[in-house]
Length: 338
Image 1 (tube, helix red, strand yellow):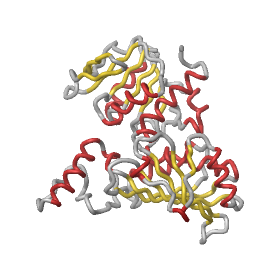
Image 2 (cartoon, rainbow, N blue to C red):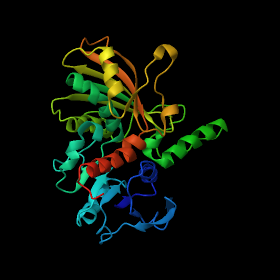
Image 3 (tube, rainbow, N blue to C red):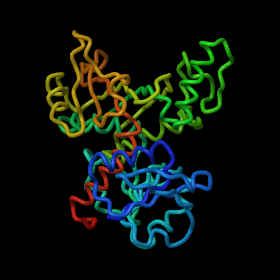
Image 4 (cartoon, one colour):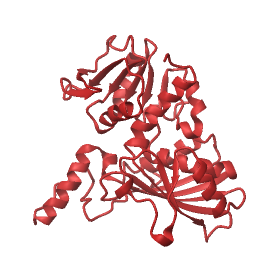
């Protein structure tokens, strides 16, 4: 299979190389693309060196089967026709096409079949926080329809890219040495702080990140009447997001039912023994594949409510892994040549 990665030098692009290799995805030819800044860089994949090519409007994608795109919404929009015109499937990690009616928005554990109907040859990867949440919501929703979701996210620096991770480390170093910390990737100092502000604010007081969770969850779960309200917070953690989730279901779901559903769900690992201080934390879940769920309990404020805590690596499941799983789903269902 002929694979292209656009944005190969970024954090997600680099993770895609690792995930493709780790999961033994069939790759006959690999082409890496990037901007003028990254063109010419070289990366190893399965023992072979690959040079990043400049992304241009030409026929470089003529024989490509799958193109993983992680270079920002403007690049996805500009080059979508270039990438797909010869039949390549574009799996896009940006927000460019997520809410388009003719572009499926896919998390394979939740709505994988949606990927089989992509009339434009584009499949959208959801926002990292949405992916993590819906993987955990799905097993509960199968027990009883979820009517309402409240979520507070605790998002690591890695969600803002590799340079943001470096900035957080440097901020801690600067403060420890008595120097003024450099602030470029965040709206203010992140070290020893939390920032209730991710992306731009809208007229309704919610940020774009929060509204992504609102709209994307409805689309993925095929639930137009589902109510979703999010507060997204940047925290001084290097990698892996956490989320506190409250759901209201059509009927009461017991903690025992929920735990059983989580324990059987694809892509979920139940880590829930708070009496022995066992619960998911980003410190030990970074770099891992699943969505980890713990602190499962009934909501004291809602007789039909359930609340739980999730942790997942947003570069893995929240981006690169989910994209590769979409490709695996297409391959398994005969939509791609083996």
